[in-house]
Image 1 (cartoon, helix red, strand yellow):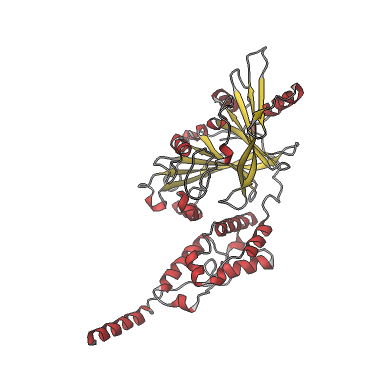
Image 2 (tube, one colour; image 1 turned 135 degrees about the vertical axis):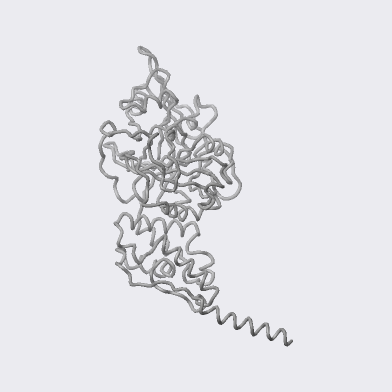
Length: 441
């Protein structure tokens, strides 16, 4: 008993001494107040400010070492990623982008941290609070920007001479030949995205081998600003950026097994001021670590067990179609906001080669396929929509001079051929041929 008493006394002494090992948590007044309604600020202050602000909001039990050390680490990490005390100093678009990301994290159940709400239940975001935040952000409420310069007026760069990212990730000059894994309509920032995959990624998606993705799998996410067309459709406009992810578990062990990079503008300038930009990528993708840090739901018929990780609905094209366009390259996409549909124009090799020219002139043997889907909300990202059930597949096959072009349409349940009238077919041929390829550097 004497030994036990001494050990208890020693433990108590050590515990008391540890309380003095207390590195500080910097605090400072809010730089500027976020320009948001009072009810929105109240939710953010209640549920987010404990970690994501320069205010000190520790409960009494948070201040006991060693718990204090863990809380301090989480707070400093959280501030580095999103700090509401300084958010108002950013441009309005950047503020909204951070809020969209925050709502997406809440929607995924990643924020507030589950271990935090376990001891701070008042920080849980209620369904009513989520509805308030979503109503304030209101994706798709802003009209697309006016059209920018035409593709013919833009100078292409030499893709082979593009500089590596600041973390060393090389640029992939062949990315334009990669196949489409999915597309995204982003109402949070009025952009369209093509998500392309290299051969390794495409084979993995087709087989369902994505948990985890295999070594060497690479993705390219291409973003364009949306623009309105006179017919009411929304089309890809100005090129914004291309981002890459490369799976190499050993080389990129420190960044979740992936290499990350982003190149912006027509000159494809590497993003960021230094290699620390990658923390933006890893922090954003952390909530979907269960999907190997990949937000995209690949359009594939492969079945993957567990939570939703693939988009089977959008891949439901009959094997009886004359061609399987999802195996081809994409040329462009558009959205019809009236019908809430999204469409992607695919082409066989001859069509894609012609589309890359400044003035597309599809040669004999070229085949275009316009696939139209309904849209649904992206379960991984608030403010995004992805393809859902196929509505129609239209094929246009060019012919030799003097011969008629072939137009065929498959639509409705089961995508059955519906044999439109000659007048309707002529209109659709003109419409499909008039779709300008999305501009790439």
